[in-house]
Length: 205
Image 1 (tube, rainbow, N blue to C red):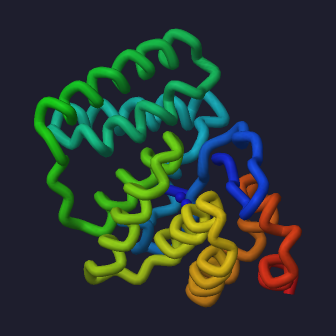
Image 2 (image 1 turned 45 degrees about the horizontal axis):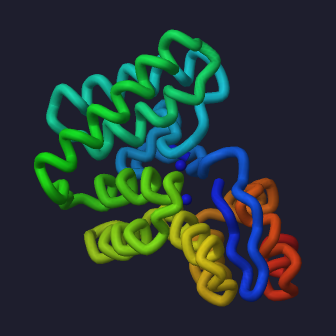
């Protein structure tokens, strides 16, 4: 927070991978991105400073110790991109540990919208868009109507080359929170879609 990037495959055209993974829009609400507090680390985002990196690492360790390896993996991936090299190396090692635990345990048991969302963000960052979309659609089947889930679905559809689907879900995200219009304008993963009139009108309209 799809606050707390990826190759956009346009129809008939391949696009180089984006440099940064997806960032969930920041929330000022008291309830949201699965606890959508403004103080929560934006899961799925790149750790842009040492403070964010340390916070992501700390949250990842707690998730790992509680057995939530899917969430821990996504957070360790964030910490692995931060400026503190020793912490980044430790986070990279722990990402592999999480994947080993998940593989040994089989499919992780996820129930809440936030758990589905967190897994989806990790999958989007690894470009496993088909599985990411499954988790995001599952999140919408729970008692949740969070704007960041629609935003992530728009991102997932856009990266898959589905411009109409990206427009549909981004429109829903914007309806739930107008901040998503500006977020999409700045999001490098949506840059290629801006060439399509319908999408351009949506983000600049």
